[in-house]
Length: 247
Image 1: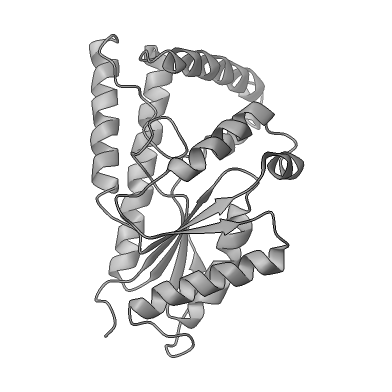
Image 2: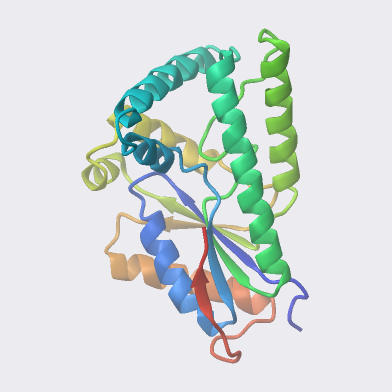
């Protein structure tokens, strides 16, 4: 018997592990099981920064200022201290953006769409991947502490929704660096180290080695997704479908 609620297939992994490629393929292929929507559940701060940098006259200045504040905030959070007000407000804005995207995803799912999620919120490890960014600390101003509480509450609410399957893409550091030459090696190394530790409140996790040739990677992804979909009562090519991608 088919599940009464559409599945969520979440794809997670370090930059350079092939998330975008896997998600694009899945969104096209999985439509054979039913109506499908692809969503991005990350904060996409890089995209926002690049968009700001393109603003006329002030874009470059603002982007540099934001990066400087962001680096300072990251340094303070590495020391488990809450950030200053400006970066905290930016982080709070990204939390609101995440919530909007997540609620939009839930509406799409409630409408019967299978969801392919590029990234998924997690609370297993603070500051890692798509987990909470504010450290657990009481040393900031009242406003910053309130923003931190709001973020924690938002992530607790989002992670109450468990994916049907999490596809965890694993990649070696040298391979990731070759694929993402514009990324810092130490940053990629930290993400790769954290990847095996990520959990999603008991959701099934399928580990995929993305050092392999792309054809092998996609074949393994199709295999584990087919097993998950059939367990939910879905069968390939038995349902008319549409394929769409949403923000």
